[in-house]
Image (cartoon, rainbow, N blue to C red):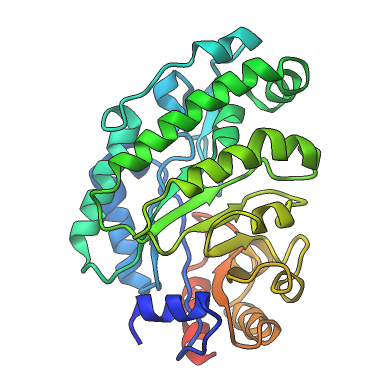
Length: 327
C-alpha cells in the first residue's frame, strides 16, 4: 500500500495494511541554512522511511523577520532560545509590519521545502510546520507580557494578531506552488495551564480557523499539533483538520477517549520522554502495540507525542518503525 493511500484510509477510519508511522525532529545549526535543513531532512527520511515528512525549521522562523533574536543553547529538543523579544508596550502590537513571504526567514523555509520536494516523488507526503498567530505573538512578547496585554489591552493585541494572521496567509499563498500534502499547525497556547478556554477561543481559536480555512483544497493531510500541557483538545477537535497530534501518553485525553471526540485520525501512542528518549526498543514496541489496541487498528498514526530529542537513541527510532510494520 502506498503512503498516501495508507494515510487517506487511516483518516477515513478504513482498514490498512499497517498503521502509518512518522517521527520528526529539529536539526539545530542546520536549520539556519535552507540547503542544510533540506539535506538533514532528506537523510532522516531515507534512513527510516516514515509515512510522511514534516519539515521542521527553527522554532523561531516565523518571528525572526520581525526582529526577534535567538540562539542555539543546547536544548535536547533542538529548539532555539529567544534572547530578545520586540513587544515591550501594548502599542507595539500596532506597529507590526507586513512581511515579504519569499524573503528572509520565510523565504529560507520555502527554499528548503522546494529542495525536499525535488528529492522525492510526488506521492511522498510532505508537510510544512506553521505556528499559529497566537503562538507567534507569545514569541514576540514573551508569555507574561502577552497575557498582560491580552487582559488589559485586548484591542491592541487583536490588531497585532490580525497582522500576524495576514502575514501567515500570505506565506501560505506563496507555498501553493509546491506539491505539499499539508501542514503541521502548532497551537502551543491552547493549554489550560496558560489560558482560560474563553480567552483561547477569543485570541486563538478565531485565528486558527482563519488559517486552516485558507489552506488549498489539494492539501489533504493537515495536522493540528497541541504542543501544550493540559491541552484544550475539544477546541482542537473543532478545527478543520484531518489529524490531531498531542502528548496522549502524558496528558488527557487518552487515545481511547480522544477517538470518541474527534472523527479524524489521531497521531501519537508513544511517549517522547518515557519511551522514545529514555526507554528501550522493547518499551517502544510495547507502547505501539497498546496504542494500536486502544484504537482498534483504525485511525491511528504511530508517532511520539512531540519532537524527537536530538539525543534519542537510534535503536528506539528503528523500533518504532519496526513496530508499525508488525502491527
